[in-house]
Image 1 (cartoon, rainbow, N blue to C red):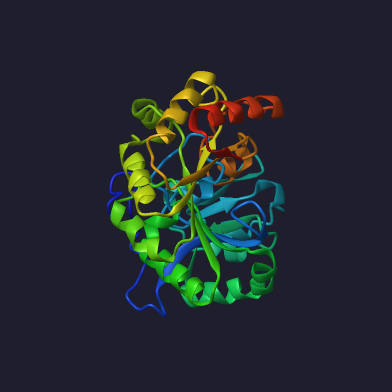
Image 2: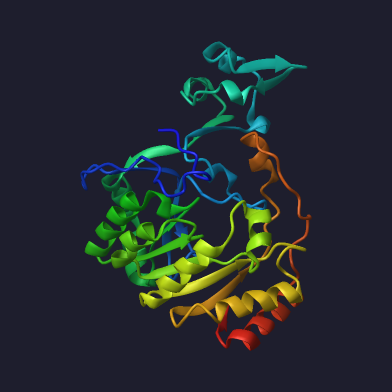
Length: 320
């Protein structure tokens, strides 16, 4: 089903089914043995689809709610098999493979024909049971490290039925659960997963709604309302601030963000500041999107410490 999430955010991706055993979701990847997405050793599941279009997004392959094709030109051996499999999309210009993505129907024939792995399909449908089979492989690590499963994205709450079914299965097996979310979803999507979530990592990007829309494509009122309701629901929340050079890492912007955090209620346990990630340019090129450059340098440790101290002074919270 084709879904324009930006315009129809109130609708889910149309992927989840009715049967708990066979309910399906669309994901891009499963990362095992992660140490940065919650306590202990974790398995992270990356969901497809997002309602925001942050200009700095470092996972652009997760933005679309549909499958899309990635072309890794450095791996291409120019064998021409993709042209044979899909001549309407693939052509050769100056001895280089060119792809007309406007004609691509995401059928995957070219991906299957590529012997070098230069073509990859981003997005695969899986059932909750298929995912649980992967998750169970690291049960020993969860038990010994206090780890578990984290749902990320994209925006995992856009597929809230599927997310809830997966999280419920994890809880039934005693596995700690966390989600990473921007919270730009209807509250019903949040509410659906709440009984099965131990920890929420919630993004807070920009305090001013107009500026938020300029850089993410959407205002932030829904996000802040969801954050407050989540806090009132008694869930442990870690607010994450991805620092973007010249956008939200100035003293003035941090002051505003700290003020917003003070309005969110008692559920917020800590604030985590994340360095700017400038290494996603090749990803954008591989899926035919335009990379917006905010610089080739990240924040220094000295700058990070100043930001942490500023937020600590404003909020009184633990700053990670």
